[in-house]
Length: 508
Image (cartoon, rainbow, N blue to C red; front, side):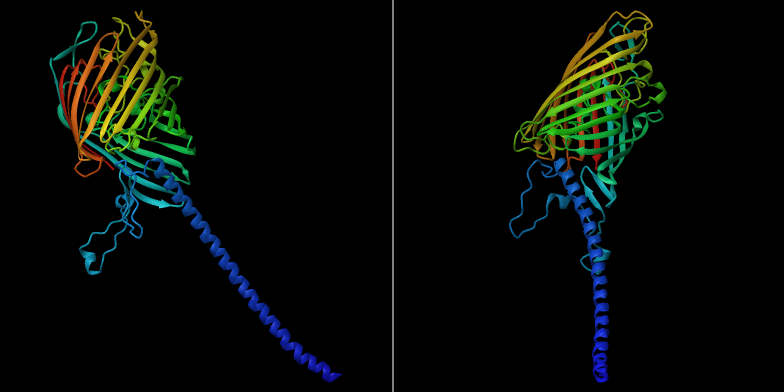
C-alpha cells in the first residue's frame, strides 16, 4: 500500500509541476497575444484615421476638379507596367534624397508639398492641416481723361477725385492660411489683405477670414467675412477674372464683402447655389457702431448643363482648353437696406463698393438727388443674370444687371420714388498660343436715370511659367463717362478717355 502511494506521489508531483509550467507558458503566450492584439488595434485605428484623411483629401480634390488636369483634359492612364508621373506628383513636391553622399553637397533638396493655387502645405496631421498661399499684384496705371473736369447730371463741373493717376503700386497683396481642424469637414480660412494704393487710410489693411462645416455636398455652412453672392464675380471666381479686375459695369452694380452667415452646396447634378445673410453691402471702413439693426441678403444659383464644370473657380477664360463645350447659366439677387452712416468712404478703394448714381455721384452725398437734400436711408435691390461658354481655348461670358434704389429717407424732398439703372458686360478671350498667350476684349454699359456710360477694352495675358497662377497682363481701356471708380480699380469717376494698365500677378 505504501509502495503504491509512494509510486503515485512520484508520478503526480512531476505531472503537477509540468501542468503548472505549461499553465505559466500558456499565460505568457496569452499576454503576448493580448499585447499584439492591442498593438494591432492601435495600428488599425491609426490606419483608419489616415484612410479617412486621404478619402477626405481625395473628395476635396475631386470636388475642386482635381480629377481633371489643369488643361481641362482627363489625365491619361499609364500603360500597363509603366507607372509614369501624374500631374499631381509633378505639382506636389516632396523631400528629394541625394543620389549619393557626394552629390548631397551639389544636388538641391526639396521639402514640403506644393499644389498650384492652393499654396504650400506647412503641416498635416490626423488632427488637422495648415496651408499657406499668397496673392500679389503690381500695377502700372496711366489714366488720361479728355478734360480737367467732369459734369454731373445737374450740369455742375467737378474736379476729379482722386486726380488722374500715373504711378506704379503694389495694388493688392494677400497672405492666406487655410485648412481643416479636428474634423476634415470643419475648415478655416484666414488672411491678411493690404493695398499700397491706399497707404495711410484706415482700410489699407484687413485681417479677416471665415470658418465652415460641410454637412454634405448639398449643404455647407459658413460664418465670417465673405462676398455677397449677387453677381458672377462675387461667386468665388477671384482671381481668375479675364483681366486682373472687374469691368466698369460690374464695379458699378455689384455688392461687396461683408460679415455674416451663408450656405452653399451642390444639391443636384450640375446645379449649385449660394445664399447669404450679412450686415451690409460692404464692410471695410465700417465699425459695428455704424451698422443699423437690419440685415442684407443675397443669393445665387447656377447650372452647368453640358460638362458640369466651368474650370477652376468657374474662371472666365478657357485656359483649360476644353475639348467639350462647357456652358454655365446663373441668376443672382441682392437686397440691402442701406443708410448713410454704414456706407464706406468713396475713396477707400479696396474691395469696397459705394452706391453711386449713373453719373457717378454717391447716392448719400448732399445734393446727389436734389439740391441741398441729403438722403440718409434707401433700399438697394439688384438682379443679375449671367451666361458663359468655353470651347477649345475660346471663352465668352456675359451678364445683365437690373438695379433699383427706393424707399428714400431724406432731410428734404426727393423728386423720385425710385431710381432704376440697368446695364451689361460682355467679355471674350482666345488662347492664341495655348496656355502661353491669350488675347481678350470686351465692353460694358450702364443705362441710368441720369446718364449712359460705356467702355471698350482690349488686352492680353502672358503665362511665362506654363501656369495661370503667374501672368503678365496689359490692357487698354477707352471709357465714356465712367460712373465707377476707386483707388483699387483702374477706373476714375467721371472720366472720358483712355487708360493704360500693366499688371504682374502672382498667386500660389
